[in-house]
Image 1 (cartoon, one colour):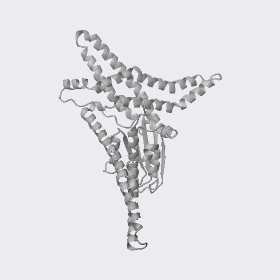
Image 2 (image 1 turned 90 degrees about the horizontal axis):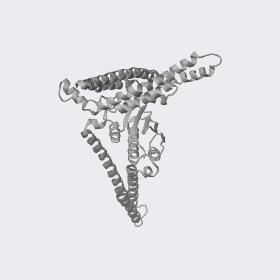
Image 3 (image 1 turned 135 degrees about the vertical axis):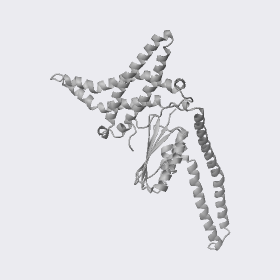
Image 4 (image 1 turned 90 degrees about the vertical axis):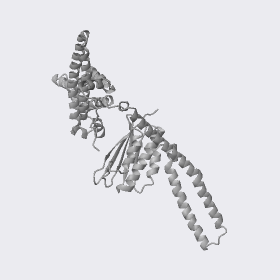
Length: 406
């Protein structure tokens, strides 16, 4: 799957990363960051100074309002620049005003929370971010140049230091560019609270529905275990007692044998259903053990590589287990795969899963396939997924689920 961020590209393929466009994109991101930051300093200082000076004659409010609105322009430029190191789009959080006209537009912008957050970001960019960009660029390129300029017989250690710093520059530049991009996305991405109380209530109701479904699933599992399973066991014992009074080899004996076979098959199917509804191994031993037990019943080999620092929170663990189960069921039914792999790690407060198979490919998340159910389950826990499934395979399902311990 193609990396979506500079950090992903550097982490997945540290050597191949050097020959990709990501180091150059990161360098362009920092260079343009210096230019945008310097421009922000000039605009903010000039607007603020003009507003303070003119405030005594009551027209200084206009420059101050201009500073606030200029911050939204700076933020818009930052969202566009972010595509250099993060291919996922950052939507504009602003909404169109309810009424036409310049005055309505200005009033609407000044009452939006996004505007004031963008003003805070513009101040942060002017005060710190572009200086840090400049510092990183100076360390990576100016310092080696100074070391090389002092080349003579007595200063060769400085030359070696400069060479090492220059060789590490692609990683240094990309590391800071990735960190800066993550900060920009955090500060400038629209927040749910700005989308209104209706969206928040919709998300909360969806979570409540999923939780209610999980509680009902546990209840059904308990009822089946304590009710239907016990009745089947009792029925088996009754058939066994009846056999004592039946002549061996008779037609009735053969009928009892067939009935016992069907009863055993029904009992096994019910046990499999109960185990799938609420697997004891998940509660007792955690996600990795439960997934290994579950895929052990598949008709093809599945490699499970799940390494987690500790047990996940119970809701996340349960959601993840059923998500993996549903994904594997889709693979078994539709892909024609002969092997599959489940890889999972916990990184930066996120559970990252990658499920791959060597099937025929062509899975389409928008085509009403089983991927729709996966997306719905992920939505309840604020997760997201990406699918790469070219015709002919292989298929890769990449899942990210926010997860906080403690």
